Image 1 (cartoon, rainbow, N blue to C red):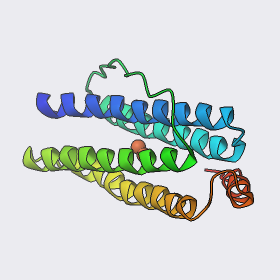
Image 2: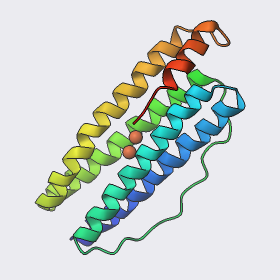
Image 3: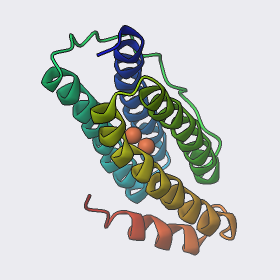
Image 4: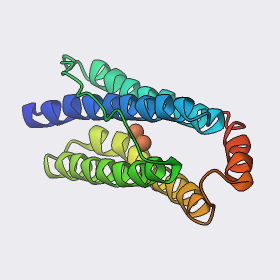
Length: 162
Ligand SMILES: [Fe+2]
Ligand SMILES: [Fe+2]
């Protein structure tokens, strides 16, 4: 694999692990606000991000590339509300989409077909990620904080399985 692409893939492992870290930080915030359903949803999301990191990890191993794990930045500690959490979730997923697109384009430029084909899954996954975050954000936006409707949404989010 091209060295530039190796570096970018290793970087994306870190980005996915940071995503997991960010969602865990949000889960901890939600737990502190007695929003256990929101916290559950975010913990499932964190696991999903870890699985994204592992997909990239395993792909590099399959290609005979040395995985170089990087330092993961500290995520924010505090959020102002459930709405703030999902605004930041959507914002973050948009950033990740841009990073995936860049990585995909780089693999195309370098004519690394296996990498480009492998990354197509991530390109599609980002459409889902943005859609899910946007849907929850739309719902929260029409709900008043500390209302019965917020508790209902919390119960709904508690049902997420995978
Ligand atoms: Fe991800
Ligand atoms: Fe994500």
